[in-house]
Image (cartoon, rainbow over all chains, first blue to last red; front, side, top):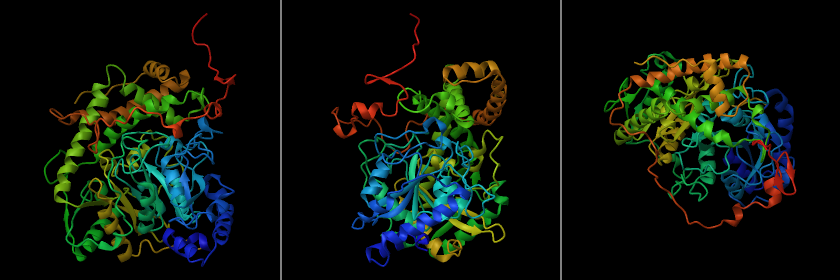
Amino acid sequence: MFNTLTVKEAIKKLKAKEISHQELYTDLAKHIASTNEKLNIYLSVDKQVEQKAEKLLDAPLAGIPIAVKDNFLTRELPTTAASNVLIGFMSPYESTVTKKIVAAGAAIIGKTNMDAWAHGSSTETSDFGPTKNPRNPEHLPGGSSGGSAAAVAADVCIGAIGSETAGSVRQPSSWCGVVGLKPTYGRVSRYGVVAMASSTDSPGPIGKTVEDTAILFESMAGRDEKDATTPNKEVPQLSKEIANGVKGIHIGICYTDHPEIGKQQVSQQILEAGKLFEKHGAHVSLVPISEKVEKGKIFTPDFAIGVYTVVQRGEVSSNLARYDGIRYGNDRSFFGAEARRRMMLGTFTLSKGYSEQYYNNAQKVRNLYLQNFQELFEAYDLLISPTTPSYAEKLGASFGSPMYGELEDMLLEPTSISGLPGISVPCFRDEKTNLFLGMNIVASWWQEEKMIQAAHLYEMETPWNTWRNKI
Amino acid sequence: MQSSTKITSDIVSHIAALANIPVTEKESQTLADGFTKVLEVVDTLSTINVSGVDPVGQVTGLENVTREDEIHEERMFTQEEALRNAPRTHNGYFVVDQILDK
C-alpha cells in the first residue's frame, strides 16, 4: 500500500519510476473511500488530483499528495474554515502557502476538517462534525488542525499542511502520534489563510517523520511581499542539516516541575529524553518554573492562558467582522456557538472602558513572556517540554467548557504568543489505547534547524515513531 | 486583586449588538455566565506586576513595514471574480439592505 509512504520515500520512488502516480493515487483513493465516512477527515477531495500530480514529476516534491487544512484559500477546491458561513464559497485567489507547495510539486489531494475558524483544540467546533482519531476512533484528534494530523496518521495523504495560533499544529500532532512543526511567526506567509489571531497565526507542516516536516517546511517558508510580517531572511535547508545531532548544545527541560504537569506520565518521558540528549553530547539541565519572571527560570505557563484568551478573542472579533454576508458567504446568523462566544468576548475586552484593564494589560504580560524567553535563549539553544498535559480525550470532551482549547494548549501558549518555533514529536505510545504523547522542542527565533536536529535524533534513537497502522 | 467583572445579560445584549451577532434573550444569560467564568481566569493577570512594562506590538523585531504604493495586477479581481460569491448582485453591483430611513 503506497499510501503509507513518507514524503521522502514517495518522492524517491516516483522520481526513480519505482512506482507511478497512478499506483500511488489509486491506493490513496481506495483508502480514503474506506475511511473517510468513519473518520471524517476530508471536507473536500480533488477528483482530478492524479492528472495534476503526473505533470509535477520533475518538481522537487514530484507530485506527492498533500492534504491542506480548510482555512487555506484555494481556487480549485472550496474553502469553508469548517463553518456554515462559508458553505459554497470558492476563493477568487490562492493562498501563498498552497501556491508555493504546488509550485514545489505538491498535489493538493483535499481540504481537511478543523475546528470552525480554527477556534478550538478538538475539531468538535466544526460545523461538519468532529474528526475521529485514527489511532483510536473513540478519541478526539485534537485541533484545530485535527483533520490534517488525522490525515497523516490515517495514511490518507503523504503529508499535510496545518496552521497554528496557539497549539493547533502541535497539539493534534501529539494526540495523533505524528510530527507537527510550527515555524517562527513570520517564517511562513499568512496571505490567503482565513485570519484568526493575526499576531500569532503560523502555517506549518504535519508529517509522518521529522524529516518529512523539514522537507515540507522548505517548500512553504520565505518572504512574501503580500504578508508584511514575513522578513527577508534566508530559509534554512532543514532537511540537509537534519543529521547534525545535539553535541555541545544547551537544552533546558521545562514544566516537568509544574505542580499538575509534573504528575503526568508525559513529564517522565521528557526527563528520559533529556538523558538521551545528554548521552549524545548535549548539556541538559532543568529550567525551574517560577510564579514570577526571574533570571534563569521559566515563567509559569498558567498566566499564558489569560493572555492568549484576551489577545486571541480581540483579534478574532476584528478579523471575523469582515463576514457580512454581502460580498461572499452567509450572514452572521450562520456562525456557530464558539465563534459567536469568541467574537463577543473580544468585542467586550476591546470596548471603551475595558481595553486598558484587559487588552493592554494582557499585552504587557505577553511582553513578560517575551522577555523571559529572550533571556532564557541566551543560555539555552533548545527548550523541551510536554506538548500536551495528557493523551487525546474522548469524543464530547470539549462540550460545555468555554476554555477547553486554552487548557489543552497551555504548555504551547507561552511560546506561541512569543512567536517562537517548535516541533512536536511522538514520545510515548500507550499499548492498551494506542494513544500517543508528544514532546515539544522549542528553538529561539529563526533557528528551526536546531530543533529539527534534536527532533530527528530523538526519533531515530527511540521506538515511539516506528509504530505504523496495520492496513 | 480586584474582583472579577460580572457580565450580565444586558451587557451581552449590548456587545452582541456591537458585534452584529443575533442573540436571543434566553441565550444571553448562558453566554453571560460563560463570559464571567472566562474573565475570572483572565483576571488572574491583574495579580502580576507589570509596572514599567510596555504592551507588546510585535514579537519578531519587524516594525513599520512599508512597500511601494503601486498596483499589483496579479492581485486584482475582475468584476466577475469579485461578484462571484455574492449572494445578491444587480447589474454588476453588490446588493445591500437599506440601513437609512428614506
